[in-house]
Image 1 (tube, rainbow, N blue to C red):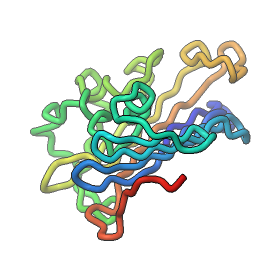
Image 2 (cartoon, helix red, strand yellow):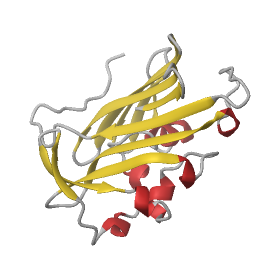
Image 3 (cartoon, one colour):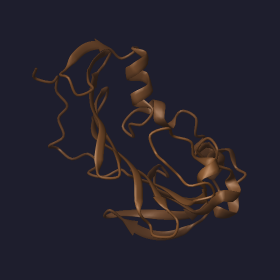
Image 4 (tube, rainbow, N blue to C red):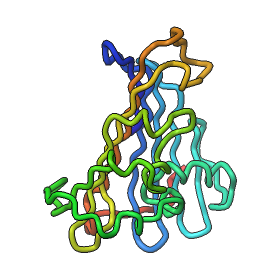
Length: 199
């Protein structure tokens, strides 16, 4: 989930929510919703099975391929897709001890990345127009044994000059808070099934 709020009243301006499932080895679905205030702007659905894909931008399912540019762009927001993670080198986090915690029922190591903001991993999460010095808090949770990430929380504070979107009216110098939260859950759940959509 990616959320943009005003800094003073915490009034929600934009909310991007992406949820989905992954079934090994090559099946996933992804559902994204963008809201501006109380208005839903887009509600997209995507199913990918191997090289096949089905995409619905609100007007019904269309059969396509996983290499379709629109599908490729959407997959970059889907946590079940390898393309979301390909620009992040987890080796940058190796050797960092962190603090033991339990998150979503999983034994984890919490790593506070505020002190590591110049690392390629940390800077890779910074949205365009924002700088690492805008980060107020940034933490990642790694599964204790495999050291793979399954939860991330990032909070940035800035002003309207750092965020440009024509459909959102912002006052000059308005303080903004940008918050990103990622959670991976239900690992190896037997009930997860990803099937072609029914038109």
